[in-house]
Image (cartoon, rainbow, N blue to C red):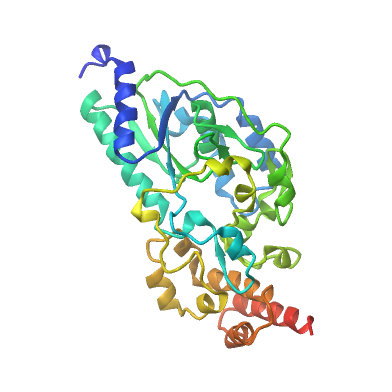
Length: 355
């Protein structure tokens, strides 16, 4: 099809309709100008707040300049899809029970990367069928893409003080994905921000990682400590982690806008392996084969078995000193991994200090 004959407004309307048919809750389009966000990214990186996430700095300005990442890009189609499992146990109830392990609700089902990428590819293929061959590329948290900045500019929401995207109809409990395209689609207008004077997310953060509104020191963030950090968790943060063994949702749970968060209709995001309400001792008892088989296709799988045990050992160190908890810790006291042994020893010493 000749690009001069394409009605891009009609195509944009079709894209939204196709997106809805594919299960996306919302789609919007923005241009590639992220000059407003680039200085903030540079400042954050210069501060070292990205910790071990070297990939955040690895690609220079390609993260904030889409057309340098994918030459020819004119527009970014941004999509969101809800992830809250419909039957998951209440998060605060799990966090409040020290014998259980809390897993961030986005990770209790299948790996969102694969689900969204496949869905976005279907959408991109449909666009290509209508518009003809063109240059595009699909992303889902998988390359140097400033997802929140793009989604904010496209009008899918506004950046909350916890740095996540907030939406009036969906809170922050959704995944984002993008299609970089050279089609000159009409762009959408940004939304106004609606956080006002609220600072609930700052006040509740267990490790005070949100050092100021819109400023996150990832090195203090429980999600970073339990997912991105490869080595030993600093001792100062271990008691503050509580029973959060993979990620942390506190800043989202307390946000007033998440009263409007909707449960997902995606079977792929349904809770698997009882990860919404399992005991720490039960999860700690998994051997490496069980970890590999039960968490195959899960976002959790990528941290590996060793870090999985590291995280649970910290949770067990913060748990009540029950026979089950103590027995679980002693069973791993001589684990082959020095990382696991270190965190188990810390946990046992912590319980010894309670007596």
